Amino acid sequence: MSPHSRPFRFGVEMKGPLDGRTWADSAREVEALGYSTLFVPDHFHSGLGPFTAMATALAATRTLCVAPLVMACDFRHPAVAAKEFASLDLMFPGRVEVGLGAGYNPLDYSRSGIRMDPPGRRVSRLMEYVRVLRLLFSGDVVSFDGDEFQLHEIEGNPLPATPGGPRILVAGGGPRLLSFASAEADIVGVNPSTAAGRGNPDTFRDALPTSIDAKLAVVRESAGDRWESLELNAWISTAAVTDTPHDVVAGLAGFAGVSTDEVLASPIVLVGSETEIVERLQQRRERWGYSYTCVESTHLAEMAGVIELLAGS
Image 1: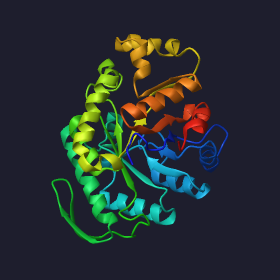
Image 2: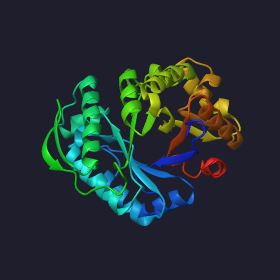
Image 3: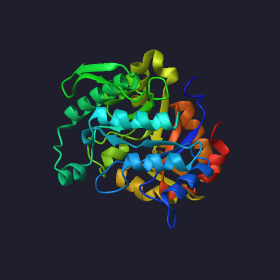
Image 4: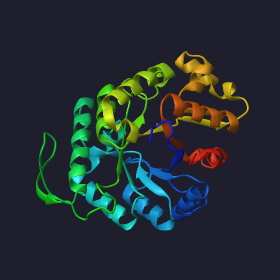
């Protein structure tokens, strides 16, 4: 299946329950509104414990998928994570995805006392992490002698219900991580690079269409024969259903020093009337292959009409 014809699906990132609702009730609301996936963040200073949150959401729903967006590899040894993910997949077959990241937020490191290595080493650790998870998901007795991880005759146990283990999502903005994700992951998040720092105008400018064109060229080349099997994910930083989209993004355009048209065309922005948003998502799937869209929980109900029109199409 070409990524350009892959059916649309939608996820929502939630740091906690909806106002006045339990976490289980919130998960059921996400499912009822047509979302495919409930994503949970992984930070020490905010949000729920990801494995407890995912397990509770799975038990409360019938079809909803869950995933961390994303789990920082520095916070848990891969043997620990593999056992937890495999257990969830065994109990709730096919409803678990493994979102992984290299860790980016200095607060997580400074407050926990975990050493924050340079970006290059964190990315290398993520790469080994994915390979170790794949080995452990096989159920075989595994030995692995890497630069970051060393495992000695450890059995992947329990065996996940999904052959080969839950699908793995890796997001990136730079060519090295995008190349790896395209060759090794099942779902690739194609994002702006954060090398300049979050909140820097250069970071947003890296999410404009010409930059995304270059990133997708890297993804296609690195994926090779895997290209058709990849699912491409977009995390939306700015969203609004409105009849005055240019007014909504004017501040962001001024901050980044670009036109409002350029902002509205960015795949991390989803602003416009329901009809305009539907058209934008269809155009992005055709141009780049994006079919899996994640919004923040503040837009859960706001995007329900778009999801009703597009999900599964």
